[in-house]
Structures are given as structure tokens and as C-alpha cells.
Image (tube, rainbow, N blue to C red; front, side, top):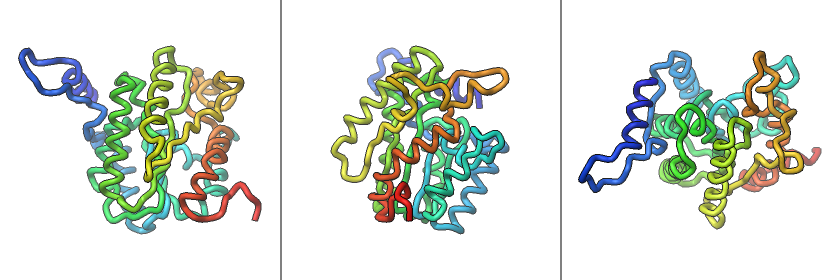
Length: 259
């Protein structure tokens, strides 16, 4: 897997003398992680779940999305009650995979993950791992996300898309600046789209314009790590921010309003 990433990254950086073809944007390719046993098992299990449930709502993403399946204790890791409150009665399926980049999500979409589905809405949160080990640029990441949106349009033509901006983190100055650049580009690209609704949901994780570190669990780990993954409380804020849009797209009740 590491060798494949290095080779693909080299392809994206090297130009052949005299060649006129465009540079390969690795973030837009379909890259499998089936060599990882846990990833393959989750992919196969999710395929079975999708066949059984025919979901009305799907969440596509990386570890931040997969975290919706986590139970506490501690309280910061107790995500399931929040999921149940907002999505438990909406026939929703979580398609988050730890460590996935845009390229890995593209592979999943092109290898059966969307087959036979017709959800009302797809929520997409992807791109954080593009800024990690593979270190892909803002432009390349935006291209990867655009490829994902194009796949959704082609494979699920009746599905509306709620596209979430890449969440803020405190990994490096480069990651912070690149995240902002990605989100500006996404906001412009999908400002007047009839299928895609863009939401910079990460704003709820800020306080006075700065990252609210209390809403991320990474600093609570031993040893502590840079803030990247929202706690259950942070995800609850995100769910609340998404809810009016999601209820409108689904055509059901706003779950912020008591029954």
C-alpha cells in the first residue's frame, strides 16, 4: 500500500520531457485499500448492509464519519446517541472508513458501494486525509472531491448531495491554509448547484475564529495528538448545524424541534 502511494505520488509530480499530456492528479484516481484486512472486511460488511437496508440517507467519508459508530465511555467517544437522535429514524447507513482519502472513496464508489441504491440524500465529508501523509494540494483535493460529486451524479441521479467542507484542524500551518483554500473553492464551485448543497460545517468547531480544542478528542489521547477528530459533543454541534438543510432535502421533520 505504501509503495503504491509513493509510485502514484511520483507520477503526479514528474513530467516526462516532451510530453503534452496533463499531470496525473492522484486525488482523482480510484485507489483500493483491499490489501488491509480490516478495510476489506468493513467494505464487504457495508456491502451486505446496503443490500439489506436500501438506505434513504448515506454518509460517505473517512474516520470522522466512521466515528458515528463509536460507543463511550468516555463521554467524548459516545457518538451513537447523537446518531440515533438525528438519524436513527431515517434509515441511514454510515460509509465512513478510517484513513480514506478522496482516491479511496472514489474506488469504493466505482467498485459496488453505490450499486442498486437510490437514497434521497448523500452526505459527503472527505479530504482530511489528503492533507496527511500523502500531502495533496488544495487544487488536487478539490479535483478529487469534484470527481466524487460527479460519480454521485452519474450513479445516483435522483440523489441530493449535502457536501460538507473539510473540517478545521491544528496539524500544521500548511494544513490550516490548505483547508481554508479547499473550502473557499468548494463554496464557489457549488454556490448555485441544483443537486449539491455546500455547507462549511466546521465553523461550529471554532470559538472567536480559533479552533476550539475542547471539541476534539486527539489532545485527550496518550500521548496527545493534534486536534483533527471532533468529540461526540463536536459532532452533535455539526449535526445540529446540518439538520435544517438535511430535513429540507429529505422532506421530513427537523429533528431539532421537539415532537
